[in-house]
Structure formats: C-alpha cells, structure tokens
Length: 336
Image 1 (cartoon, rainbow, N blue to C red):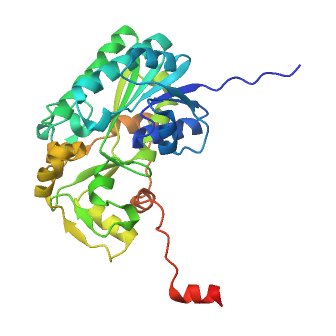
Image 2: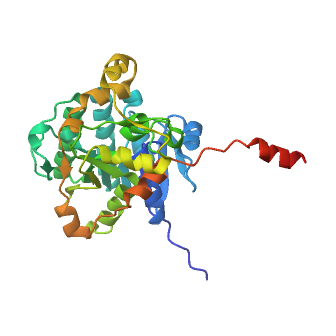
Image 3: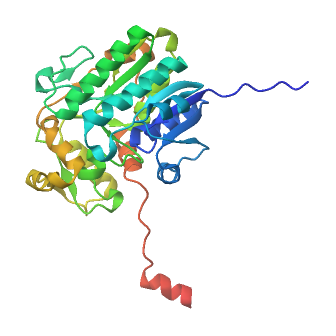
C-alpha cells in the first residue's frame, strides 16, 4: 500500500504584489510551504507578482473580514504585508486590515509575520536603535504603525502569536514602491540620473528584501524559542555616508549616469497629487538624522543575519539590462 505524502504547510500572504510580500512568498515556498494569496483582482495580481511557482489565488479584499477568514483556513502562517490602496488613508484602512488578520490568526491558531520599519521611531530614538527604544514618530504613518504593533502585542494576551522584524528602507528585485525605485534610481538600469537623497556624512539604513525574508525564515525555524509576540531588528546595509548607496548604483549602471543632489522642493510641489511623495516628505527626517538598527537580539538567536554584498544586492535591484538596439554594422551583417 502506497504511503500518502503529507500535505505541505500553507502560508497565506496578504500583499503578495508588494516587494516584501513577494520576497516572503518566495522564501516560504523555498521552505516547503504552499503559498496562498488574497487579492481583489486575481488576474492582475498574478501578472504583477510574476512568481515562478504555483499560487493558490483567492478572490477577496483584506478589508473584508470574511474574505480573510476564509483564505486563512488551514494556514500555518499569515504574512501581513498589505498596504492601503494608493498609500492613502492609513488609519482608516491599515488598522482594520490588521484587525482582520488578527482574528484570522486566532481562528487558525497560526502566527502573523509582520514586516516592521523605522517609521515607528522619531529623532529622539537616537542614532542606534534597539527593540526597546522609545517610539515617538513624527509622521502620520509612523503613529499608525505604532498602533498596529500595539495591536499585535495585545493580541498575544489572547493567544495570537506574531513576529515583527523591523528594518530600514526596503530595496530589492521587484520592490516597486520604495525610495530606491521611486527616487534614487528611477528607471532602474535605464536611469539617466542617480538622485543622492541623503545629507553628507549622515548614515542611512537599507534592507535588501531577500535578506530580510530569509531572516524571517530563520526565525520561524526557531519557533520553539520565540515569544508569542516577538520583535527583532534587522540591521541590513548600514551606509555610513548617505552618498554611499548612490555611488553603489553608479558603480552598477556606469559613470554615464551622474549623481545629483535630490531636489526636495519638487517633491513638495507634486506631493498633493502623488501619495508616495507625501510619504517622502513625512519621512524626510530619516535622511537628516542617522538611524541605525541594533541587531544584537537577532544575531543572538540566529547567528549572523543574512547579508548579500551591497554590489550584488544593488545589481539585482536595478533589474535586467535594457535591450541593446542593433548597430548599423549588425544590420549590414544580417542583410548581407
């Protein structure tokens, strides 16, 4: 009699078309999980995600509790990496979406994976920030993120397990909404100008999405050593001089793309029309103050954190090389 193979564990990913959601889906699949995803438009989401493996797509909205509860049935882990549509109305949308994930995790008896960021802090947190540093954000999004983390902390009292890993500004392959893709190297390898966002001599924290996703996996591997609600800091790429990331991009693209100081006034003019630009203004302080994440707690549990060398991470983040137009000599050879 043939033995039936055990079914793979299921990971429900909310926000799979975002940079972190996609990276976590790839990492979970690599750990043997079957990936399930919830989307309002399954066809569009499948096209945008471009994942190299089968996904169990479920039609639904993270704002509708019934949709989330249905998608979470049988899940071993829930990734909550979903953001409000068009990066607008954070409190009205982000808070109820997380509340739905909490109820779904309680019903399924599973752990929520929540990618955190430095937005929960303000300038008073200091230059080196650990998990217990004061949270006094200066932005609307930061205040909402503080409340969302508190929701997860309080949910642990009701048996809902969660894992937060805070990191710097995200970059990586298929990370569409980030400082890296929207400002510093807009256009990827085709960028004609590289924008230097930081102030001279001011360090900045960057998080390469695949490294951060692998960090979540290594923490999950140690589930028996995690608290019901646990928080870790991921140091990522600390660029001591803010100009270092722009120089790394130039090294990958070529010197023909000049580095120029980012012209902040243009952002203020365009911000009323573009949600992402409003976020840039709110978080401008992280380019004026150094915020480095202390990862001692993380490395005490998993050892050295995953770390792709900066040059390789930047090269992968810039995307494929643009197609070269055939030179006249090439065409002459073909037509000969």
